[in-house]
Amino acid sequence: MRNRYESVGQASRLSELTWRRHLPHYQLSSGYYFITFSTHDRFQLQPPQRDCVFNALCFLDTKKYELYAAVVLNDHVHMVINPFESLPKIMHSIKSFTAHEINKMLKRKGKVWQNESYDRVIRDEDEFLEKLNYIANNPIKASLARQYEDYKWLYIKGWITGDS
Image 1 (tube, one colour):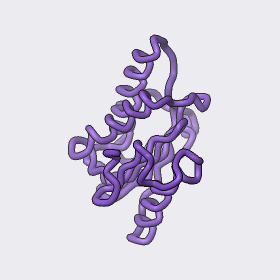
Image 2 (image 1 turned 180 degrees about the vertical axis):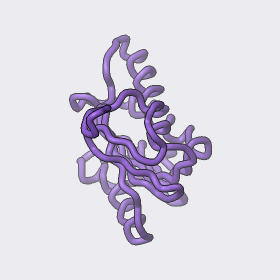
Image 3 (image 1 turned 90 degrees about the vertical axis):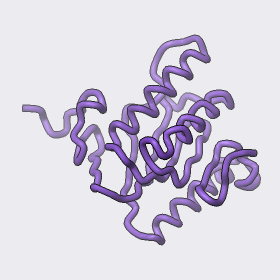
């Protein structure tokens, strides 16, 4: 029997309702989620790699989730989604595809993403709006832009399109 704190293998083998790596993860049958994931060893994503990640997040909108907000920073990503599939499958799709593409760009092999991601159920409209504002202000707080409109890798549905 597996120790409940032991990390599990690939995302595709995980339960659709609860799973545990180092952090516990729970998924409701419907709802909005704030998700954060980081690069391995704080690897710095350059503009072409941020393009790859941002485009992948936008591509999966309406296919695996409804995307409400996303920002790709130098070493991590934040997003707010309403998933159509399990979170492990979604995260596996994003991380696997982008890691392969980034490694191909850089002519290297190796990890791009940390195994874990942080996900939080958004419980009400106030928290939903707080997460959207947090995402919009993240590039400013990280000194990557003076105002959110200037940041290329930022999307908020109906507000900021990322088409700068």
